Amino acid sequence: MPSHTLIQDGRAHDAARFSEPADLSALESNETIDVLHIANDTDLETLASALGRIETILIDFPAYTDGRGFSLAKQLRTRYGYDGLLVADGPLIPDQYAFALQCGFSAVRLDDETLKRHTIGDWQAALDDFDLTYQRGYAIKAGPATSIFDARLTALDERKAADPFFGHSAELTLRKSIKKYQGDIVLATSMGVDSAVLLHMVSRIDASLPVIFLDTGKHFRETLAYRDELVERFGLTNFRNITPVAAELAAEDPDGTLNQSSPDSCCDLRKVRPLDSVINGFGARITGRKRYQTPERANMAILEEGGPQAKVNPLAYWTAKDITKYMRQHDLPPHPLLALGYLSIGCQPCTTRVTAGEDPRAGRWRHSEKTECGIHMVDGKWVSTETKATFEAF
Image 1 (tube, one colour):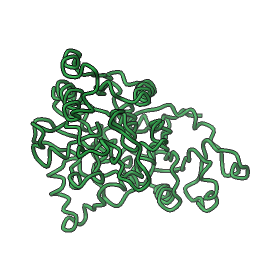
Image 2 (spheres, helix red, strand yellow):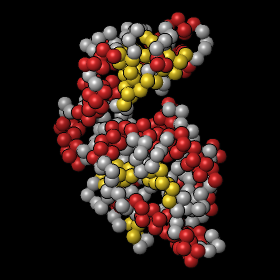
Image 3 (cartoon, one colour):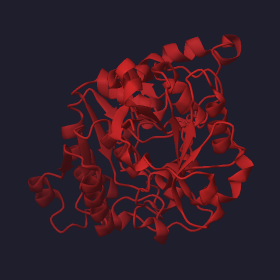
Image 4 (cartoon, helix red, strand yellow):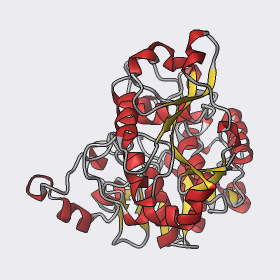
């Protein structure tokens, strides 16, 4: 039998676990099905009730000219709500890769003969060559639904001119930005409730990308444990744990209670200064900001240039539901405090639980007029609306 290779996120992976997939007869039992192989003319109603126990579905493509598998994938994602791994199995060509992702496929499985005709490099290049959305798709459903066939309605040309990454998936955005700012881009993470998403994506694209975590000395123990778990689990080889300057702490907050008398000064000492001293040395920064979070971010571009530091927002068009779905699909561990009612997590003295119906950030600096930690502010004021919008969850 020919060997196979799995192409996922533009990279080659071992496909050994797919070598002996189950067929439809496995649906007769109530056991969990690791990998199910279906033909491209399968009636999806026959497996609808079992989808919750099927971890991976291989959809057969007898030839690259037979597109029925794309329709099955789209229906599985949108009509049946399947959130497991979907793999296109057959002799597809790189030109179809982006379309497969748009229809809901997670990866493609190729045999050796197919890879002789189109190398791994061809598949990687395909992600860069086909970066427009031709129709409403599954993979970027949280983003803009545009059509290049009706520029009068979508103003696609103008949007692409203003934001070169407009319409890109989060993974493609990361891949392109890492390539564009090679060696001069950094991801700053708060190790908050959704930080695992970007860290996971980055680890699969370039585990050596600089990742910065600001250890203020006031974090929850759970946050620090979560940090260690994610770094080890994702194999991040260029993780940097930065801390406030010890001499400044001794001079300005010797007993560690500055947060009680002057929370703004505490944030400046423990967050703003140490972060700025490191992160401003990079030409571009990856953020986890999303359009739905605040009114200032409602029109935020995926790629923001023009200032002293470019900002890349791969999750700009994502919703809270998209975050949850990605976490579940990839079995990512949640922040341990999330289950205890902490929806936005900062330093322990200034963070409380959030009750039902409250804004997720209501627990930050509760009973205070303070709403921001001060990052991206100058002399206590936002430089501009655009600068205000760069606030992250520190």
